[in-house]
Image (cartoon, rainbow, N blue to C red; front, side):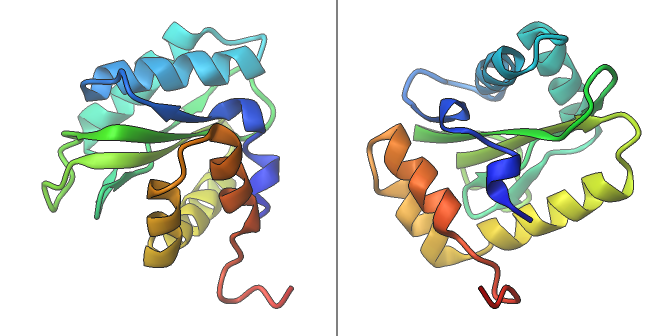
Length: 156
């Protein structure tokens, strides 16, 4: 997985004002909506919230991967958020979430959706990466850290 195909610097943010899951997913919806003219932030937020009602996308250890399939887009789009204060995401370990990678994919992306989620789960299961992501204070530095991560199976 090439992270740069999913995110751009404009969709990597340090956020201090989000107080709950709905607020952060609304913020994510706006970020992704700005990248895709055919969608609105509200529409994206509604789909992400609908997915959350099926079960939390909190992976544990302060990480969540909210995701949804949407009609009207032709590629996967991601956004990364690092929260200053962790929020309750109903993760299985009950740890507050402060790292979120949100993903929206076209409705027809079935296998691709699962492959991207698996790669993201591997990425955010790396404790060194998560530690680095929790320490910088600028959006640009977060983007550089994400761009620099390579899976253990990647020989480049």
